[in-house]
Length: 153
Image (cartoon, rainbow, N blue to C red; front, top):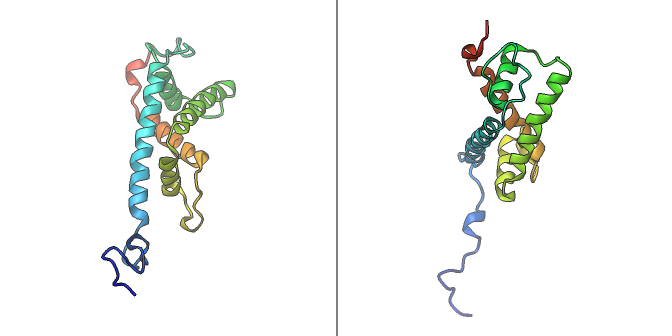
């Protein structure tokens, strides 16, 4: 029998048992939080590049972008305003879904793990979970924006 070579190991180094004092999930959560923030910013930038539809011309000016209108809507209206609400929701949802669909698979898997509530049953990739969190961050950013300068009266 020949002598073992220096690179022969009995157990792969990266597959060693996790110790109870090491939280391997925390870095995934940090990565996911950073990427969710970046995705939300990308959605907001895309909404800022879309010209305003003009549905609030009588009550606010000058709302120049869909982002301005979304922020105005968040501040001034509740979510039960029928067709107005549906239009904004569909626009935001399609923008978020399009942005999330552009993610590389490996990145989407890590983000899915980071936003998953149940660490024991993490999905391989869940665009729906990612979209829900990105949408929540975008909506929160819109509701925090001051719209006082757009008041007509």
